Image (tube, rainbow, N blue to C red; front, side, top):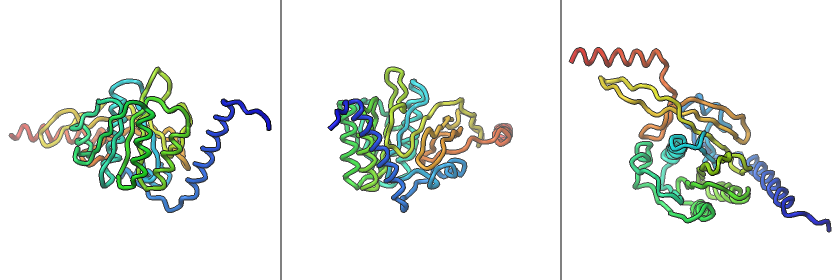
Length: 259
């Protein structure tokens, strides 16, 4: 029997996992999808939305707090639009519950699992997915050693019909999505300048505005959108056209003058 080096063996195992993941995706014709409710996005997604029983990975476009927070809220909006409890596994106490609630995910729906390491986060996610009674399982990690953990998460999500959302944090300047993964979709979320809200006589800062890049999806092409962040029901929106914003500003000014 020829000797196979550990490095080559790991590469072969990763390749087999990826092939099996593709085959599994092709065999599940009755898969359920969660649309974003924005036609411009849904028509670009294979299946017309996110596969519910699947793993999806999200990262900030850049290594900064703003993009990291945007990625968290992007996942929050997805989980908020599923019915039922959500398990959130994390190794850092940096979530802001009121912010999650503003994106549609109230604290009464979330169970938090504090973990010591990335490996613990992945293990807790897998156990949560296999429970079968959760709407979504969310985890936050800085590094995944190889493709095998994401393959296990994908299989657990498929087997039990639960959505898995994995935040890949920046660490050491390396691309969080650079390594192979069994995730069905992979996303990059970046902040862009927000618009101004002007309606009902009230002016202020509008909803956050993001550059949402679908970096990879099985069965479809990558794409990039500029969208407004989630509302209180977890729904994204296309930014208002400049003419609409101007009209809204004029109506607000008229209302103030009349008062």
